Amino acid sequence: MAHADTHNAAAHPHPDAHAEDTMEHGGHGSLREYVVGFLLSVVLTAIPFWLVMSGAIPDPRTTALVIMAFAIVQIVVHMIYFLHMNTKSENGWTVMALIFTIVIVVIALSGSLWVMYHLNHNMMPMSHEMSSMG
Image 1 (cartoon, rainbow, N blue to C red):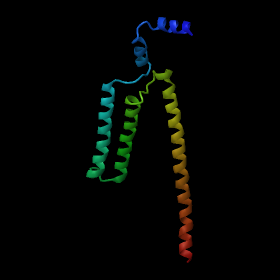
Image 2 (tube, rainbow, N blue to C red; image 1 turned 120 degrees about the horizontal axis):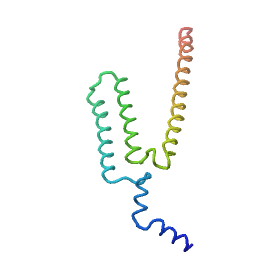
Image 3 (spheres, one colour; image 1 turned 45 degrees about the vertical axis):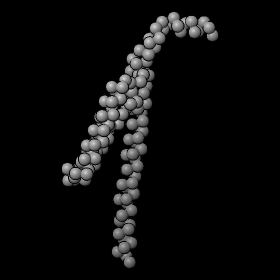
Image 4 (cartoon, rainbow, N blue to C red; image 1 turned 135 degrees about the vertical axis):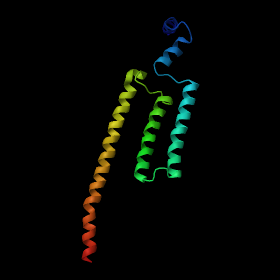
C-alpha cells in the first residue's frame, strides 16, 4: 500500500498536476463558464416568455416551433456549460451515450405520436357513424 502511494506521488510531483489533468479531460468548469451558462440560460428563457406574453408571433403553431427551437438550444447550453459534456470527456463516451439517448427518445416520441394520430384518425369515423344512427 505504501508503495502505491509513493508511485502516485512520483507520477504527480506537483499537487496541481492532477487538477490540470482533470480540467483537460472534462473536469469541473470555471466560475466564468458557469456565469456564461447562467446568462445564456436566462436569455434563452426570457425570449420565449416574451414571445408568448406579447403575442409577437400571431400563429400559435409557429410560436410553439420557435419555443421548441429555443428549448433545444437551451438543452445544448446546459450540457456544455453545466454538465461539461464534450467530445474529449471520458474519451467521447458521454457524447455517444447522449446520441444513443436522443435516438431512443426520438423513436419513442415519434412512435407514440404516430400511434395516437392513427388511433384518433381511425376512431373518429366510428363516432360520427354512431351519432348519425341515433
